[in-house]
Image 1 (cartoon, rainbow, N blue to C red):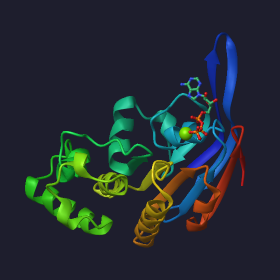
Image 2 (image 1 turned 60 degrees about the vertical axis):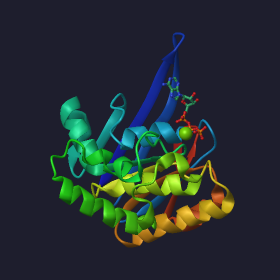
Image 3 (image 1 turned 90 degrees about the vertical axis):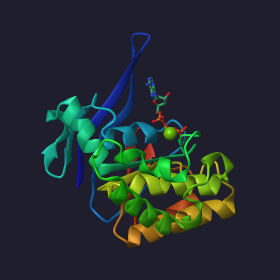
Length: 220
Ligand SMILES: Nc1ncnc2c1ncn2[C@@H]1O[C@H](COP(=O)(O)OP(=O)(O)OP(=O)(O)O)[C@@H](O)[C@H]1O
Ligand SMILES: [Mg+2]
């Protein structure tokens, strides 16, 4: 599904060129649960942004489902992103003024599907993440773990090709982290492809495959 060939990425800072990713070669197949492990500053988030079509300024070749990502226009790429990628972040990134259902339905806003169908999809996602009774609850009143469940429900509502999670348990205690990782594992068993970034070695036991990033280089 995802094929990165000789991907490099640098930033220009004070006339100095800082290389963040070096010749990354990586393939990710549908159905995998891939962990990307590396120290702070090793380029994990940079790599995730690139995989999630948020960043197109890189050298090398990125093929998604057999097509070169570099050949899409920005407009085409944002369509591809909306359809194919679910994003999960450490800080949940929920909209505080909305309730649980409204947050989960955000990715459907421009999809043109009916309210009825959206409600139906939301119910299904709430069931998958174990929040059936929280549909009308304000997200302000939720615990960290519950917030991350809402974010996960939001990430899967469009049935994306893959979800990318950047330190999804970074703000959670160890018991809640385990619950969230168990949830990822059960979603993966239902067929969801997951790319997880973490610097917590213990979480990699949930993954099918672990990729180590060291100073922007892949050490698989
Ligand atoms: N927009 C940018 N401009 C300049 N440098 C950047 C930019 N984004 C990231 N960097 C640099 O790239 C390097 C890798 O950053 P990145 O965020 O990918 O690391 P990370 O592995 O996700 O770290 P962490 O575990 O702390 O989240 C860092 O040295 C960072 O300072
Ligand atoms: Mg990061």
